[in-house]
Image (cartoon, rainbow, N blue to C red):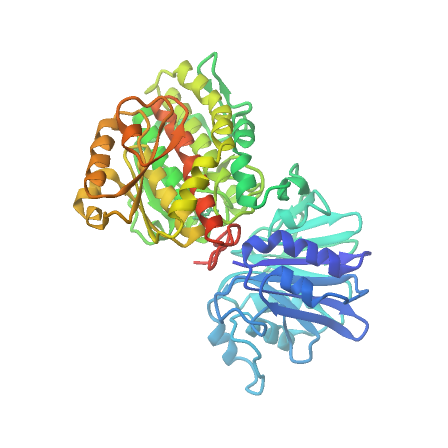
Length: 608
Ligand code: M6R
């Protein structure tokens, strides 16, 4: 995944593009570049490294040009290097191009080019710019349309040509692209945070659409040349929401925002006095929710863990058969769907994850109703599903999902409750909803005190392996804890259902291995107690996540205690999750890791 941006207007383009690139850096950060119109052709600067490195390389550079494009890269073809950084350019340097995605048939396309064209990079992208140059006949939009017609794969591109000053041509197929319409000109970017400093008015490009963006006009057509009328959407997020706001890292800020975004996500959706949940914007007909017998939940990474938790809720509150799978696996399965008896729910923070999107499209073709649960407004999944429930977490910039996970849990919990009541399999439970309303305050109280996590980090940060154990609702939370730890601290971590420990992982336990055990009050409390005894008997270090008023044994057996406020059993994942996040954060900080932009990762994985 990469971030692309462009600007054309009355202001100097370079500062606008650099500002936007900083906002897109979470999408990739191994190299970056810009191209801006100048008097004698394009000014081009590319570096290996982050946007700060590009800033440093541009120190003292004053370019008056008011049109340009920029890119921050996450390498797929060719190592991170200056020559592989975008923009890529035609031999005569008349065309500059930035690309997000993968050109799957780049080898075959290359064969169509004259033999004497010398490639300057190892990327799949470069072939595009040379093809564009071959196909250009005085109309950049036409050249882009014709060239992209030959491309297989997923892409979003922004292109400028020296002979068409003040114009950017942008297109998408498989990777997101948004156009911003502002007072000082028009913009294009991979994602909203890049635009919000400049404008809240945006157009979402749909699949296979091409936009011709001038400083005072935007026209859109399909790749087949059919004109499209697009509506302009006003976005309520502001740029301040996407800033660090005084926190050392975005991840910490986003952990701290959880009480507020959970409240935001609950707003208008639950009435605890009446014991009901409602989704005022849900348009899918209730008859669908009543007639189905099976529900399939598909997602990747952290979002998959949210689905795993939801399985327990759906099984508890509804009579549905529930299947949960990972997008990358699901898309290649031979599915025996019964269209009128099943539905698909995709869960994704970004709404752009390639594997989840592929699963959505595969199932949509079978006429199965599809609901998307996602955070990013107007994202591809939100638009391609039959309906969408937004999580309302606001922009999440840190690569590690935190607030997006807890708000996904919230929407999935409410959705399970809603389905249960609608189907008559669950009466509703006012006390449960009242307890849910307490969760934001409880999370608030929980995340204020980081002392215990800092102590654990100080004493355990050199460990290279951690084990996370949980059962039932807290087994997926253990998986999520392990994922969080490995992605930001590079400590090897495994999340296991505690009952499986004796079938293998127990062999790992010695006095060197910290074992994080999730043991809130629940139906499996005593089983977790036995697991802790097994760990202690082998010398393992136990980091317990249990309730503040635990009096039944787990608390006193732990070497370290990460306390959880008391709540209903079904709601425990909301409160066992923050300790996973803060523990990982403190360990990563102690190890000197780049918490917000861990190595090899990108915020949203829009390629397979
Ligand atoms: O945008 P999505 O929720 O679809 O992203 C799915 C995963 O890539 C994502 O959850 C990833 O696992 C997180 N970085 C983990 O913190």
